[in-house]
Length: 383
Ligand code: CAA
Image 1: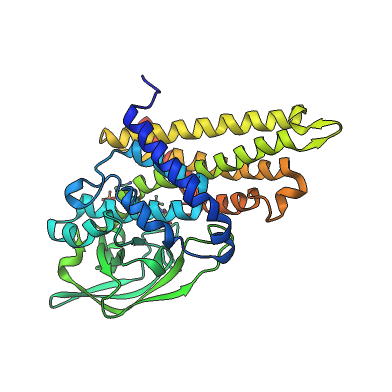
Image 2: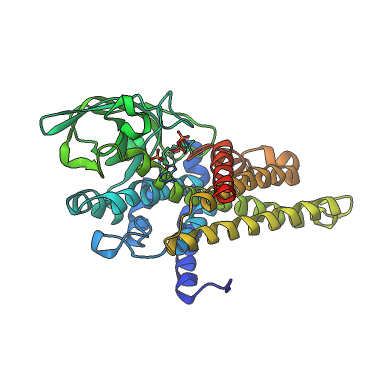
């Protein structure tokens, strides 16, 4: 077993770190404060090949492995969690299912420009009444001639207002529950498609989140992804990979909070010296550093297994669960180390704390991750 990164992996990590620290980090607080979508970063991210990292070059991507993706994404997340989730959704939740389940027509039209970073994608699964229970879809898709007519409302859609197209899940046969769900690539220009309410959020304020309204939206038959009834399986398979991305976003946030707190502890003086001389602070730093390293190892194992074509359902959920809870814990302690200064907007740990919370919720809450993990463990035991 070799824990060292190859020269190529180090180069990708360094390229992402350099861009993130020079261009993304300096404006992260401003974008957060204005709730401004990080559109300004997307052309450079496209140029660096960050928007379709695991997509082969023939379909506009960088043709890299999952380890390269998480190395780059962590660097972006350290700088700005909102920019990281924008990147993660385009890579993991939009591009991956088209690459894995799409035909050549769909890849040419709906993967290539998105992997090149010329267009942006989203993933529309959640509904007002279908969050954790994703199979309870109310959106319907009815075949009429050469079109599916989609009717319903999706909510909490990351990239929603800025996306050029998205993967939409809808019921083609209500009687069959999850086996009656199908997946569609829906272009924002299609008749009946509109962006609904834009959400104001606690954290990741620069990332865009909205409802998507499908009012008898006319989707050409050729935009069906995979087979009729295969949608739930596509959604779950996609989330297995997506969860590695959110785990990475979380570990990036945790690292940013940890580095800020460690630095502050050497500068802030109390009782005649820097607070880093106190054992209480030292123990916080030791636990923060240990948990971040443990989380990153879970991510790298999941990425390695993905690259080997192995089932990542359990290991992806483990990485997501541990890293998101680590991000929340580390950012809480980072505020504690800063004392009152951690609670005001002048210091970045307040933003890290707000940004960390969503990682315990989206792409499956911590409770859903525990359910996925425990089901896999019991299956391993009972065979
Ligand atoms: N890959 C492929 N197929 C899978 C699968 C996987 N990982 N997991 C389950 N399936 C299949 C099962 O094999 C089963 O198929 P068969 O009936 O043919 O055997 C079918 O799906 C149903 O499986 P379950 O019985 O396990 O389904 P369930 O209704 O009990 O739900 C769940 C399982 C894990 C709770 C699932 O509903 C889930 O993951 N919920 C959370 C949803 C979620 O993460 N939403 C996030 C929204 S996206 C988002 O947040 C994006 C963003 O903004 C960034």
